[in-house]
Image (cartoon, rainbow, N blue to C red):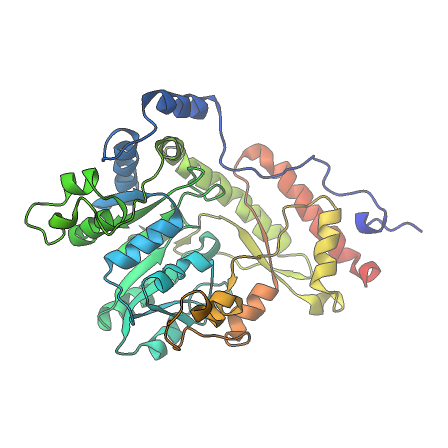
Length: 417
Protein backbone atom coordinates (compact mmCIF):
# COMPACT_ATOMS: atom_id res chain seq x y z
CA UNK A 1 0.00 0.00 0.00
CA UNK A 2 1.32 3.48 -0.91
CA UNK A 3 2.42 5.59 2.04
CA UNK A 4 0.72 8.96 2.52
CA UNK A 5 4.19 10.45 3.02
CA UNK A 6 5.35 12.39 -0.03
CA UNK A 7 8.87 11.04 0.47
CA UNK A 8 7.45 7.57 -0.11
CA UNK A 9 5.13 8.43 -2.98
CA UNK A 10 2.22 10.20 -1.32
CA UNK A 11 0.74 13.64 -2.01
CA UNK A 12 2.61 16.65 -0.51
CA UNK A 13 0.90 18.52 2.32
CA UNK A 14 2.02 21.94 1.07
CA UNK A 15 0.29 22.79 -2.18
CA UNK A 16 1.48 26.37 -2.73
CA UNK A 17 4.37 26.80 -5.13
CA UNK A 18 7.59 28.13 -3.61
CA UNK A 19 9.40 30.11 -2.54
CA UNK A 20 7.21 30.31 0.53
CA UNK A 21 9.08 33.15 2.24
CA UNK A 22 10.72 36.20 0.68
CA UNK A 23 12.03 39.26 2.48
CA UNK A 24 11.80 42.22 2.63
CA UNK A 25 8.25 42.91 1.43
CA UNK A 26 8.51 45.30 -1.51
CA UNK A 27 5.56 47.17 -3.01
CA UNK A 28 5.12 50.10 -5.38
CA UNK A 29 5.73 52.62 -2.60
CA UNK A 30 9.06 50.94 -1.81
CA UNK A 31 10.04 50.95 -5.47
CA UNK A 32 9.12 54.61 -5.81
CA UNK A 33 11.27 55.57 -2.82
CA UNK A 34 14.30 53.65 -4.05
CA UNK A 35 13.98 54.99 -7.60
CA UNK A 36 13.56 58.50 -6.23
CA UNK A 37 16.80 58.07 -4.32
CA UNK A 38 18.49 56.82 -7.49
CA UNK A 39 17.54 60.09 -9.14
CA UNK A 40 18.62 62.11 -6.08
CA UNK A 41 22.04 60.79 -5.01
CA UNK A 42 23.94 57.52 -5.13
CA UNK A 43 26.81 58.75 -2.92
CA UNK A 44 26.52 60.66 0.34
CA UNK A 45 29.87 61.32 2.03
CA UNK A 46 28.33 63.26 4.91
CA UNK A 47 25.35 62.90 7.23
CA UNK A 48 22.72 64.26 4.87
CA UNK A 49 19.80 63.20 2.70
CA UNK A 50 18.46 59.69 3.11
CA UNK A 51 21.32 58.66 5.41
CA UNK A 52 20.43 61.40 7.87
CA UNK A 53 16.74 60.54 7.51
CA UNK A 54 17.40 56.89 8.29
CA UNK A 55 19.67 57.63 11.24
CA UNK A 56 17.17 60.11 12.68
CA UNK A 57 14.40 57.54 12.34
CA UNK A 58 16.53 54.85 14.00
CA UNK A 59 17.31 57.21 16.89
CA UNK A 60 13.60 57.86 17.37
CA UNK A 61 12.62 54.20 17.06
CA UNK A 62 15.22 52.94 19.53
CA UNK A 63 15.13 56.07 21.72
CA UNK A 64 18.90 56.57 21.61
CA UNK A 65 21.06 59.64 21.07
CA UNK A 66 23.12 58.28 18.19
CA UNK A 67 22.62 55.87 15.28
CA UNK A 68 25.46 55.49 12.78
CA UNK A 69 24.88 53.54 9.57
CA UNK A 70 27.52 51.22 8.10
CA UNK A 71 28.04 49.08 5.02
CA UNK A 72 27.11 45.82 6.77
CA UNK A 73 26.32 44.30 10.13
CA UNK A 74 29.86 42.90 10.26
CA UNK A 75 31.20 46.44 9.76
CA UNK A 76 28.90 47.66 12.53
CA UNK A 77 30.26 45.02 14.91
CA UNK A 78 33.85 45.81 13.92
CA UNK A 79 33.23 49.51 14.52
CA UNK A 80 31.56 48.85 17.87
CA UNK A 81 34.51 46.81 19.11
CA UNK A 82 36.98 49.46 17.97
CA UNK A 83 34.89 52.21 19.53
CA UNK A 84 34.85 50.27 22.79
CA UNK A 85 38.66 50.45 22.79
CA UNK A 86 39.20 46.72 22.38
CA UNK A 87 42.97 46.37 22.01
CA UNK A 88 45.41 43.57 21.16
CA UNK A 89 45.43 41.02 23.97
CA UNK A 90 42.07 42.10 25.40
CA UNK A 91 39.47 39.39 25.93
CA UNK A 92 35.80 39.69 25.03
CA UNK A 93 33.30 37.10 26.25
CA UNK A 94 30.93 36.06 23.46
CA UNK A 95 28.27 33.35 23.11
CA UNK A 96 29.60 30.04 21.82
CA UNK A 97 26.62 29.70 19.46
CA UNK A 98 26.08 32.64 17.13
CA UNK A 99 26.88 33.77 13.60
CA UNK A 100 30.63 34.09 13.35
CA UNK A 101 30.56 37.86 12.59
CA UNK A 102 29.45 38.45 16.18
CA UNK A 103 33.02 37.70 17.25
CA UNK A 104 35.26 37.41 14.16
CA UNK A 105 36.14 41.15 13.98
CA UNK A 106 38.04 40.64 17.22
CA UNK A 107 40.74 38.78 15.31
CA UNK A 108 41.25 41.88 13.17
CA UNK A 109 41.90 43.84 16.36
CA UNK A 110 44.30 41.28 17.82
CA UNK A 111 41.82 40.63 20.62
CA UNK A 112 40.67 37.27 21.94
CA UNK A 113 37.08 36.02 21.66
CA UNK A 114 36.39 33.94 24.77
CA UNK A 115 33.48 31.64 24.03
CA UNK A 116 30.84 31.13 26.69
CA UNK A 117 28.40 28.24 26.95
CA UNK A 118 24.83 29.05 25.98
CA UNK A 119 21.43 28.01 27.14
CA UNK A 120 19.55 25.55 24.91
CA UNK A 121 17.91 28.49 23.07
CA UNK A 122 21.37 29.61 21.91
CA UNK A 123 21.59 32.77 23.98
CA UNK A 124 24.56 33.22 26.31
CA UNK A 125 24.17 31.66 29.75
CA UNK A 126 24.57 34.51 32.29
CA UNK A 127 25.49 31.99 34.98
CA UNK A 128 28.58 30.93 33.03
CA UNK A 129 29.93 34.38 32.18
CA UNK A 130 31.50 35.28 35.54
CA UNK A 131 33.77 32.23 35.58
CA UNK A 132 35.39 33.40 32.33
CA UNK A 133 36.31 36.89 33.52
CA UNK A 134 40.04 37.54 33.91
CA UNK A 135 42.12 40.73 34.30
CA UNK A 136 42.30 40.78 30.48
CA UNK A 137 38.52 40.82 30.01
CA UNK A 138 37.32 44.10 28.52
CA UNK A 139 33.71 43.47 27.45
CA UNK A 140 30.79 41.07 27.15
CA UNK A 141 29.11 40.71 23.75
CA UNK A 142 25.52 39.46 23.76
CA UNK A 143 23.65 38.02 20.77
CA UNK A 144 19.85 37.84 20.67
CA UNK A 145 19.71 34.63 18.65
CA UNK A 146 16.84 34.15 16.20
CA UNK A 147 15.35 37.40 17.51
CA UNK A 148 14.77 36.22 21.09
CA UNK A 149 16.33 38.62 23.62
CA UNK A 150 18.95 37.25 25.97
CA UNK A 151 18.55 37.53 29.75
CA UNK A 152 19.56 41.19 29.94
CA UNK A 153 18.80 41.85 33.61
CA UNK A 154 21.52 39.53 34.89
CA UNK A 155 23.98 40.47 32.14
CA UNK A 156 23.57 44.19 32.71
CA UNK A 157 24.12 43.78 36.45
CA UNK A 158 27.18 41.58 35.93
CA UNK A 159 28.78 43.98 33.44
CA UNK A 160 28.21 46.92 35.79
CA UNK A 161 29.49 45.13 38.87
CA UNK A 162 32.64 43.91 37.11
CA UNK A 163 33.27 47.22 35.31
CA UNK A 164 32.98 45.68 31.84
CA UNK A 165 31.47 47.17 28.72
CA UNK A 166 28.28 45.47 27.59
CA UNK A 167 27.87 45.22 23.81
CA UNK A 168 24.98 43.74 21.82
CA UNK A 169 24.60 42.07 18.47
CA UNK A 170 20.96 42.71 17.57
CA UNK A 171 21.24 41.55 13.96
CA UNK A 172 18.34 39.10 14.37
CA UNK A 173 16.35 41.23 16.76
CA UNK A 174 15.25 44.62 15.42
CA UNK A 175 12.33 45.75 17.55
CA UNK A 176 12.65 42.91 20.06
CA UNK A 177 12.56 43.89 23.72
CA UNK A 178 13.30 42.64 27.22
CA UNK A 179 11.29 44.10 30.06
CA UNK A 180 9.92 46.78 27.75
CA UNK A 181 13.37 47.98 26.62
CA UNK A 182 14.47 47.40 23.04
CA UNK A 183 17.53 45.25 22.53
CA UNK A 184 20.59 47.13 21.36
CA UNK A 185 20.10 49.82 24.00
CA UNK A 186 21.23 48.10 27.20
CA UNK A 187 24.99 48.63 27.02
CA UNK A 188 27.66 50.87 25.61
CA UNK A 189 26.72 50.06 22.00
CA UNK A 190 24.46 47.83 19.96
CA UNK A 191 25.29 46.64 16.44
CA UNK A 192 22.70 45.55 13.86
CA UNK A 193 22.66 44.11 10.36
CA UNK A 194 20.40 45.31 7.53
CA UNK A 195 21.18 42.23 5.42
CA UNK A 196 18.49 40.80 3.14
CA UNK A 197 16.40 38.52 5.40
CA UNK A 198 16.79 40.50 8.62
CA UNK A 199 13.60 41.86 10.25
CA UNK A 200 14.68 45.34 9.16
CA UNK A 201 16.32 45.08 5.76
CA UNK A 202 18.16 47.38 3.40
CA UNK A 203 19.41 44.50 1.28
CA UNK A 204 22.85 45.20 2.74
CA UNK A 205 23.99 47.55 5.48
CA UNK A 206 24.15 47.90 9.22
CA UNK A 207 24.14 50.42 12.05
CA UNK A 208 25.49 51.09 15.53
CA UNK A 209 23.45 52.53 18.39
CA UNK A 210 24.90 54.35 21.38
CA UNK A 211 24.03 57.03 23.92
CA UNK A 212 27.69 57.79 24.53
CA UNK A 213 29.15 60.76 22.65
CA UNK A 214 32.74 59.53 22.72
CA UNK A 215 31.69 56.14 21.36
CA UNK A 216 29.83 57.94 18.59
CA UNK A 217 32.92 59.92 17.62
CA UNK A 218 35.01 56.77 17.65
CA UNK A 219 32.58 54.97 15.32
CA UNK A 220 32.74 57.96 12.98
CA UNK A 221 36.55 57.84 13.08
CA UNK A 222 36.50 54.13 12.30
CA UNK A 223 33.83 54.03 9.59
CA UNK A 224 33.23 57.53 8.19
CA UNK A 225 36.51 59.27 7.52
CA UNK A 226 36.91 62.71 5.96
CA UNK A 227 33.80 64.84 5.39
CA UNK A 228 31.50 63.33 8.00
CA UNK A 229 34.17 62.95 10.64
CA UNK A 230 35.40 66.50 9.99
CA UNK A 231 31.89 67.90 10.33
CA UNK A 232 30.81 66.00 13.44
CA UNK A 233 33.82 65.39 15.67
CA UNK A 234 34.18 68.54 17.79
CA UNK A 235 37.28 70.63 17.48
CA UNK A 236 39.47 69.93 20.47
CA UNK A 237 38.40 66.27 20.73
CA UNK A 238 41.48 64.00 20.66
CA UNK A 239 40.17 62.32 17.48
CA UNK A 240 39.51 65.53 15.57
CA UNK A 241 43.00 65.71 14.09
CA UNK A 242 42.47 62.25 12.56
CA UNK A 243 39.19 63.18 10.88
CA UNK A 244 40.53 63.29 7.30
CA UNK A 245 41.95 59.77 7.42
CA UNK A 246 40.00 58.27 10.27
CA UNK A 247 41.40 54.85 11.10
CA UNK A 248 41.86 54.21 7.38
CA UNK A 249 38.54 52.51 6.60
CA UNK A 250 35.42 53.69 4.79
CA UNK A 251 32.35 51.68 5.78
CA UNK A 252 29.46 53.87 4.63
CA UNK A 253 26.02 52.54 3.78
CA UNK A 254 24.90 52.89 0.16
CA UNK A 255 22.12 55.48 -0.24
CA UNK A 256 19.89 52.99 -2.08
CA UNK A 257 20.18 50.58 0.85
CA UNK A 258 19.39 53.47 3.20
CA UNK A 259 16.28 54.31 1.16
CA UNK A 260 15.06 50.72 1.33
CA UNK A 261 15.75 50.45 5.07
CA UNK A 262 14.05 53.80 5.76
CA UNK A 263 10.92 52.58 3.99
CA UNK A 264 10.99 49.28 5.87
CA UNK A 265 11.51 50.92 9.27
CA UNK A 266 8.18 52.71 8.96
CA UNK A 267 6.52 49.29 8.58
CA UNK A 268 8.57 47.31 11.10
CA UNK A 269 6.15 47.35 14.03
CA UNK A 270 3.29 46.20 11.80
CA UNK A 271 5.48 43.37 10.50
CA UNK A 272 6.37 42.35 14.05
CA UNK A 273 2.74 42.38 15.17
CA UNK A 274 1.83 40.09 12.29
CA UNK A 275 4.71 37.76 13.05
CA UNK A 276 3.67 37.60 16.70
CA UNK A 277 0.23 36.29 15.73
CA UNK A 278 1.52 33.62 13.38
CA UNK A 279 4.29 32.64 15.82
CA UNK A 280 1.66 32.08 18.50
CA UNK A 281 -0.21 29.75 16.16
CA UNK A 282 2.96 27.84 15.21
CA UNK A 283 4.06 27.48 18.84
CA UNK A 284 0.68 26.12 19.86
CA UNK A 285 0.33 23.67 16.97
CA UNK A 286 3.91 22.48 16.50
CA UNK A 287 4.26 22.04 20.26
CA UNK A 288 1.56 19.35 20.17
CA UNK A 289 3.39 17.24 17.57
CA UNK A 290 5.52 14.35 18.92
CA UNK A 291 9.12 14.77 17.88
CA UNK A 292 9.08 18.56 18.12
CA UNK A 293 9.57 20.59 21.28
CA UNK A 294 8.71 24.29 21.10
CA UNK A 295 9.18 26.66 24.02
CA UNK A 296 6.88 29.65 24.52
CA UNK A 297 8.40 33.11 24.92
CA UNK A 298 8.97 34.03 28.60
CA UNK A 299 6.89 36.80 30.15
CA UNK A 300 8.28 40.25 29.48
CA UNK A 301 10.26 39.08 26.44
CA UNK A 302 9.22 40.17 22.97
CA UNK A 303 10.91 38.50 20.01
CA UNK A 304 11.34 39.84 16.51
CA UNK A 305 10.68 36.27 15.28
CA UNK A 306 13.55 36.31 12.82
CA UNK A 307 13.04 32.56 13.08
CA UNK A 308 10.94 30.18 15.12
CA UNK A 309 12.97 27.25 16.39
CA UNK A 310 11.97 23.82 17.59
CA UNK A 311 14.03 21.05 19.16
CA UNK A 312 13.89 17.70 17.40
CA UNK A 313 13.27 14.80 19.81
CA UNK A 314 14.19 11.52 18.09
CA UNK A 315 13.38 9.60 21.28
CA UNK A 316 9.71 10.42 20.70
CA UNK A 317 9.83 9.00 17.16
CA UNK A 318 11.52 5.68 17.71
CA UNK A 319 15.00 7.08 17.18
CA UNK A 320 14.24 8.38 13.67
CA UNK A 321 17.38 10.19 12.44
CA UNK A 322 17.01 13.95 12.13
CA UNK A 323 18.15 13.93 8.51
CA UNK A 324 15.39 11.49 7.61
CA UNK A 325 12.72 13.52 9.41
CA UNK A 326 13.88 16.73 7.74
CA UNK A 327 13.92 15.06 4.32
CA UNK A 328 10.31 14.00 4.89
CA UNK A 329 9.31 17.59 5.67
CA UNK A 330 11.00 18.93 2.55
CA UNK A 331 9.36 16.23 0.42
CA UNK A 332 6.01 17.40 1.78
CA UNK A 333 6.75 20.76 0.16
CA UNK A 334 7.61 22.39 3.50
CA UNK A 335 10.90 23.61 2.06
CA UNK A 336 11.34 26.48 4.54
CA UNK A 337 12.00 24.02 7.38
CA UNK A 338 15.73 24.45 7.78
CA UNK A 339 18.56 23.20 9.96
CA UNK A 340 20.97 25.97 11.03
CA UNK A 341 24.22 25.88 9.10
CA UNK A 342 26.46 28.94 9.25
CA UNK A 343 24.92 30.09 12.55
CA UNK A 344 26.54 27.39 14.61
CA UNK A 345 28.80 26.84 17.64
CA UNK A 346 31.95 28.81 16.83
CA UNK A 347 34.27 26.15 18.26
CA UNK A 348 33.36 24.04 15.21
CA UNK A 349 34.83 26.59 12.79
CA UNK A 350 38.48 26.48 11.63
CA UNK A 351 38.94 30.19 12.40
CA UNK A 352 38.32 29.51 16.08
CA UNK A 353 40.29 26.28 16.14
CA UNK A 354 43.39 27.56 14.32
CA UNK A 355 43.30 31.38 14.06
CA UNK A 356 47.05 31.64 13.48
CA UNK A 357 46.65 30.13 10.00
CA UNK A 358 44.92 33.35 8.91
CA UNK A 359 46.54 35.64 11.46
CA UNK A 360 50.24 34.72 11.68
CA UNK A 361 51.65 35.41 15.11
CA UNK A 362 48.22 35.36 16.74
CA UNK A 363 48.80 34.29 20.34
CA UNK A 364 48.15 30.73 21.43
CA UNK A 365 45.38 31.67 23.82
CA UNK A 366 41.91 30.61 24.85
CA UNK A 367 40.70 31.44 21.33
CA UNK A 368 41.68 27.90 20.24
CA UNK A 369 38.74 25.56 20.66
CA UNK A 370 37.74 22.01 19.82
CA UNK A 371 34.48 20.30 19.02
CA UNK A 372 32.89 19.11 22.22
CA UNK A 373 33.97 22.10 24.30
CA UNK A 374 30.41 23.46 24.56
CA UNK A 375 28.05 20.49 24.96
CA UNK A 376 24.87 22.49 25.60
CA UNK A 377 25.29 24.70 22.53
CA UNK A 378 26.45 21.83 20.33
CA UNK A 379 23.62 19.50 21.31
CA UNK A 380 21.03 22.24 20.89
CA UNK A 381 22.39 23.22 17.47
CA UNK A 382 22.44 19.60 16.31
CA UNK A 383 18.77 19.18 17.24
CA UNK A 384 17.37 22.54 16.09
CA UNK A 385 15.02 23.03 13.18
CA UNK A 386 13.78 26.48 12.27
CA UNK A 387 11.17 28.28 10.25
CA UNK A 388 10.88 31.88 9.08
CA UNK A 389 7.79 33.53 10.56
CA UNK A 390 5.28 35.03 8.17
CA UNK A 391 3.53 38.30 8.95
CA UNK A 392 0.37 38.62 6.83
CA UNK A 393 -3.09 37.30 7.64
CA UNK A 394 -3.18 35.50 4.30
CA UNK A 395 0.02 33.67 5.26
CA UNK A 396 -1.84 31.72 7.93
CA UNK A 397 -2.99 29.18 5.32
CA UNK A 398 0.63 28.45 4.45
CA UNK A 399 1.54 28.16 8.14
CA UNK A 400 -1.29 25.65 8.53
CA UNK A 401 0.09 23.58 5.65
CA UNK A 402 3.52 23.54 7.29
CA UNK A 403 1.97 22.31 10.52
CA UNK A 404 0.16 19.60 8.54
CA UNK A 405 3.44 18.54 6.96
CA UNK A 406 5.11 18.23 10.36
CA UNK A 407 2.16 16.35 11.84
CA UNK A 408 2.11 13.97 8.88
CA UNK A 409 5.83 13.18 9.16
CA UNK A 410 5.45 12.61 12.88
CA UNK A 411 2.37 10.40 12.67
CA UNK A 412 3.93 8.20 9.98
CA UNK A 413 7.46 8.15 11.37
CA UNK A 414 7.54 4.35 11.57
CA UNK A 415 7.37 4.22 7.79
CA UNK A 416 10.55 6.30 7.67
CA UNK A 417 12.55 4.02 9.95
